[in-house]
Image (cartoon, rainbow, N blue to C red):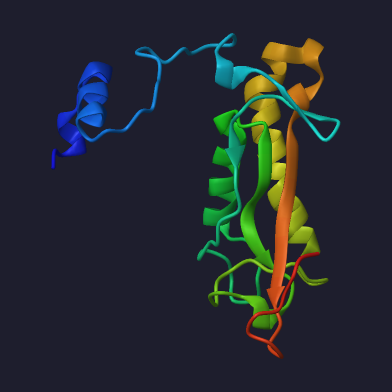
Length: 164
């Protein structure tokens, strides 16, 4: 088996995939810039998402023990905004009850954390606006969507999952 880091060109990869009997057509050159396929908006369920880049929920380990974001959380979310992704689908897996936390430093949405969680969201929107809004003021925020992914494992059943 060949090491992936030895495949340095598109042609190397195609040759290797053909030797394995894998058919996966792709372009030899990745297009970039505002007219590339990944930069185009998409309409999903009547809503427009400004491009194909998304930040998906992941469970962090850098919150406080009471579920609030730390400076590390804010820095990570700021970078989500700077990335140019137009769909930030809860860049964090946020628990809605203490028993639902996957680790003691996972963020949690509760009455006591609403203000700090709101500032986390504001930070990502501000970072995006500062980097991209000036360049595209005529497009009204370029169809950015930001939200949280909430869930809680219910202790009464190991298989029950509730999404709010």
